[in-house]
Length: 204
Ligand code: URA
Image (cartoon, rainbow, N blue to C red; front, side):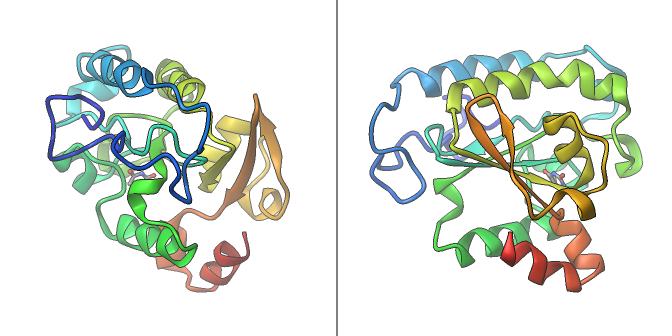
């Protein structure tokens, strides 16, 4: 939902000054916000996979559309489904704290997910659900052109890199996705379950 111009309470962040720490200071395309807004409307009516049946809201993504840094999670949970915004539940509170610990504000980065509708009972999205939804994320990345994509957890990391190794093996190294550098780390939900992960996330 975020990204649509008619939802002023959930800005895409286009008003963020381009010189801000998390944004590209040059080369930002003034049409980025519009492109994402129309993609967001496509997502809102998407019925490409079975996940659309259980959703309250689609969760498109939000943040600065010219951010240097983009976070990619797995998919909406109950809070995100209720609000139509990514990472607003407990894991989201922790992600926001991580972003702030980096010296950035949440509005200076872009936050998206692999799938835009909540999997029932928060199960892991199925490969066919990921495949149906992935073109939306690909277009988001193509539009935002972040320097760094920080993938959160196994699903995001494996989907973006195409590798099948667990996050415990993949973190600590960087990968390439088109022109972006991919930095995998643990999902904030994993840090809530196992506080030892927090230190590793800080290192990443
Ligand atoms: N977990 C995710 O992977 N994404 C969200 O938006 C919220 C929780």
